[in-house]
Image 1 (cartoon, one colour):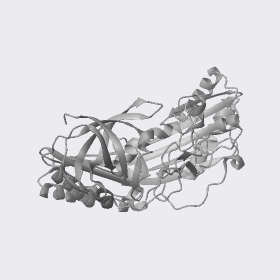
Image 2 (cartoon, helix red, strand yellow):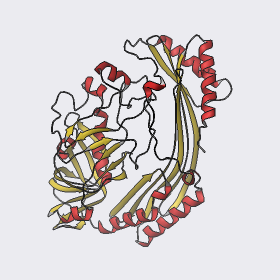
Image 3 (cartoon, helix red, strand yellow):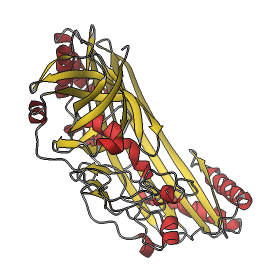
Length: 453
């Protein structure tokens, strides 16, 4: 059963609407959110923390003429609904007018959500601390048997959200989630693995532990390698942490505001011809609600087709200004960002990762990246470091671990230099992106220095 029952959602909305009308305001929108998460944390081969959290949230947006504002609370009992409505109205009355502010959408404008598989799995919502502990115990035993120390988390939970407005729009979505992350540390080396899914059955802690332990074993006694440009094989987690940095710029508002790297440049063949990127909430490996912050149905977009930027996300407001149709990627109003693609799918190729490695005469295999920061917003030059499994490849095989590198690399240039890709998988990285992406072989990747760690 969802954390937000539709009947309860309508009850809360009815109370909010009565409070708004009593204050002389007809147009309101409410957003209800609820989540329940539980986490088992372990380090030094021992479980040391087990926590659980439940919370819910009510956010009310009022519209008065060309003014709008929002107030939010996590209290929904007693007089809390009336108070948050009154706060939203008071804020709206003193907000600056927005000449291009649109009225709330009707159900017909917002669109009909297509049928699709449920993202709520009862077994995942019901998993117990004992079940998580048994899985962690097995993972720790695997790492410990490899003379390494295990640390990580096993998190499960569920969330639900609903959006209703005074023009009759009602949206509701519920889903579950499971995430397991493990780092195996052995003397001067480490290995890492992480996975997430909407179903706990799709996450295999034992397999992830074996992978992390093997990375730690193979990277023992790392050698220092000179910085420079190398052919690299980036595993999917490294790909999403780096490529995931560019998607906030795929926004009609960001382009119009001249804060996107797509502003003012030719979008023809911006990337390599083998690069295809979609935003598709309906992809079977994706998660998230099929409606945006205003309740509009999300459309699947082809952001990049054969290296050329094609579709740009539009909110209702940016679509009206451009004279086009909204794509269902708007963020909750009011906001300064406009819209953003949230369900990235980077198409893969037909290669296996082991075959990609075998095709490299001399290069670097990278498990993951961390501490990524932007250096140049137009060329999307990022800096960061490798960690937890960085290897020298010679004559088609990893021969030994290497000291971690710092890199300065343009993502735009990188996506021109991809020469091979594996099948796309759901991957989780250091920067908390959960995207669908392949491993990539990239030529000329720029490592600038060896790190101290």
